[in-house]
Image: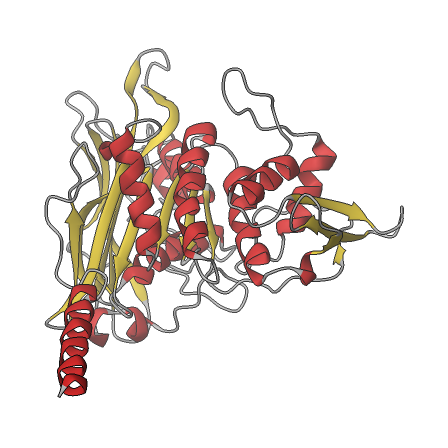
Amino acid sequence: MLTSLSLTNFKAWQRIEKMRLAPITALFGTNSSGKSSILQFLLMLKQTADSADRSIVLHLGDEKTPVNLGTISDVAHAHAEHPEFTIGVEWTAPRQLDIKDPDTQRTTLCKSDKLAFFSQVVANGGGKLTVHDMEYGLGTTTFSLIRGTAKDAYQLSTNHPSFRFRRADGRRWPIPTPIKYYGFADEVRTYHQNAGFLSELELAFEKMLRSIYYLGPLRDPPKREYTWAGGDPTDMGRRGEYAVAAILAARERGETIPRGRGKSKLSLEQYVAHWLKELHLIDEFRVEEIKKGTNLYRVHVKRSPGSSEVLITDVGFGVSQILPVLVLCYYAPQGSTILFEQPEIHLHPSVQRGLADVFIDAMKIRNVQIIVESHSEDFLRRLQRRIAEDQDIDEKQAAIYFCDIENGKGKLTPLQLDTYGNFLAWPKDFFGDPMGDIAAMQSAVMKRKGVEEE
């Protein structure tokens, strides 16, 4: 699970310093206040790691990637000509990483489930990026690659009290530029006798990035027929286009979802149907092949217990819009981090409130982390209520932020919650000015009544 994020000079954000990320992290704010940029930053890190091009430092995206950010100038804060980006991520691994002393292969050099990564990337003004330095942390131990004064010369270092990197015999060739923004060049291990374990840190970082999933705000409209040829989608797609395929793939594998002590396990399809009913959207939900062997499927639903069965295209638009949200929460591997961008679009306020319960349940049942960008006051109010009830979530498991622009720079304000779900401070215009509208309305009513009485 991601525990903190730091960055500099990315879009609206000149600097974010150790932003705490909780099991449920919610970003609120006005339009164009930098909320989506935080999600985009994480997606940029992920798609760079996924890229087959080892020479690209930061993959800003194309039509095939989760996010397409344009050029260096587009992503640089204030469109700086020579931006310097910093990347800082801390996370907790599913299990402890135990690095053995390369000299003995018996004793432990360092061991922890707390990991960190930092990198400084600089631009030369011609669209080319270079890694100036980078550092991995495991527990309290750090391993760094720092660029020296000589051209393309890097040095390895560590703060470990008894370990030092040892050069191999022969000519001291300079260490070349890192791979992407996080990878030690292959020569690092060749030129040193005891640096092979650095690959374990890179792998742990890549595993963390691979566990990030994303669903965008614009989701595919429902279809009368869905095609599935037996594939196993890795995610829902940017628009949720693989939601039905994921349900069918989970059915084919016979997967079930445990719901806790005393409750029967459910298939993904059954769990989705359960939540659709709980949210009062529909009463029944099932996916069925039109005719065996055709690979064509239809989604059948019932609006209420006594109603006739119809296709998903014949009910409210909200059902198809929330479907990928529900599927991703319970389809993504346990321990995943899921990024949602405005999941409440096209949903009734009561369903928006229910989304908070869905996310809390997914956090509890499947240990997934939810990072959501939202405009929904109803979602937030339900989250506050559940914290106050102190049943499945407490104030430490939620991190809520208000994003705003101040003097041309993004401003991130953490909203502190007490044990009763109350905010210790409420930002100005957090959800506009509803009290101002109420006061103005009352003033108008009194004025009109006065005129009419005359």
